[in-house]
Length: 479
Ligand code: DSN
Image (cartoon, rainbow, N blue to C red; front, side):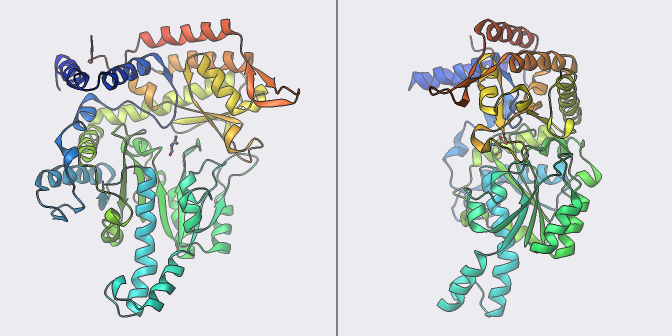
């Protein structure tokens, strides 16, 4: 463990060096820490990385190009990048029990693109090359290349719909995944809000996707990946899981057996900065048969790897392999459940009636609000959330009818179940006292709202008081 003094000195010195060149950047960095310390952060996809993870990103690795893979680069002088990339991959394999790990993706979208193209290369391009007796795509005739491009662009993907909690990269039309694939979605049962595996199997039988995608960014329940793999196998689909949101719960062994995607999926993607609590970035884990294609991610779809971020991934993954990370992961879920129960007790409506992961979705139509009105009113009261669609959302993806709340960040800060009940009270107070507004012509507005400033101020003060008992980065003193 480093001493608190070392951490304060490191960050203070870094700011001093930056301030000498562009003081406004140094001020903005310091202001960001101050803002994060003061806000009650319930954004389900955010967290607070450790000082060691943050510091691993600010160094000379940023100056290196390193296309290729460990020991096989397109640039000379990558021996130190090799060290950190190999370490990050080793920690990832050990942590998740994966056969192969690729740690170069810069984000979750990038990781998903690497995965999609690895599957397309393995299942569409490789057989086409074999048929044409070509070693690689440059050896194909113009006619064969034209035919292959058409084939690559017309494959089928079945993923969870956005309003049921799926991610936009799982085939949502405005995203590149929706343009690349002939896509269909499975939703959730309208009565329970839960995935209906029989319906997924029926959709798979009818549609016969090349790729079946599971995973979510706004579904508050566990997914049975064993059943999903059986469905994929029954139609010859490759099974892909995007565990970006719940990777920390997999790492911390909260999700095991049927609920751990790694033993069941052919390929798993994730971000490293959400419940996993690492630097902002992505990662792909896969079975051995896809490893070679996954490793072609850069330059296939990725720009040059970010060695400084891979260094930080290695640090954060080493942290996640420590025993206390399992305790952290369990506390994330206990906190989410306490928050959900506190809200339900006060009369809120939650999608699926609760949670068994790190997030919950409040259906704010029961308060007479849209997601946008609720999000802004909560922000006025110092509570940072994000609006989110609910299944079959009548208000669309912009205004929405839901508020997504998550506990990874506040759990890192040390808050526990008692504090979650207080937060449920604060959220309920704001939502129940916010009134929807009207447009100038008297029609109902989906954005305007009214919240008494005295209520907002009082809740904001209560939120600040709650947080003073749980200082953020207590080892970092910038004064
Ligand atoms: N933007 C992330 C989230 O908030 O869930 C997913 O990409």
